[in-house]
Image (cartoon, rainbow, N blue to C red; front, side):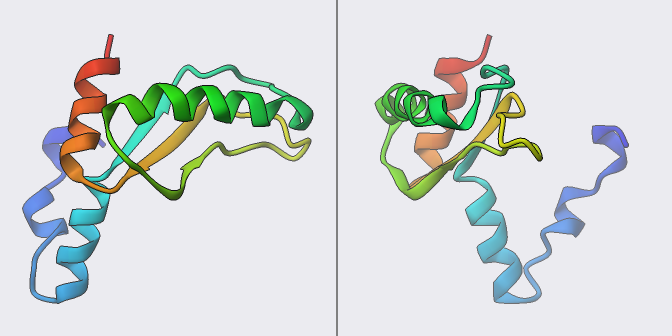
Length: 99
């Protein structure tokens, strides 16, 4: 699916309050790619600390707002989600960290 194939206005129709809330919440989340892949469970606390320190420079991260997914062996997959309190912080993080 390419970007042109998705009608985001239709996806986020505000017919129900829940849809509007969902859109606002997505605007607060940044997907971070190219973090170290295969980090074992015992070293992930340090990785999370580094990610929090770097991304907190752009705004307040929500409580439990950093999610680093793992595989079946509990090793990192190479990407993460950072959820901010404000959409403006997420946009600032994208601008600051992109490229």
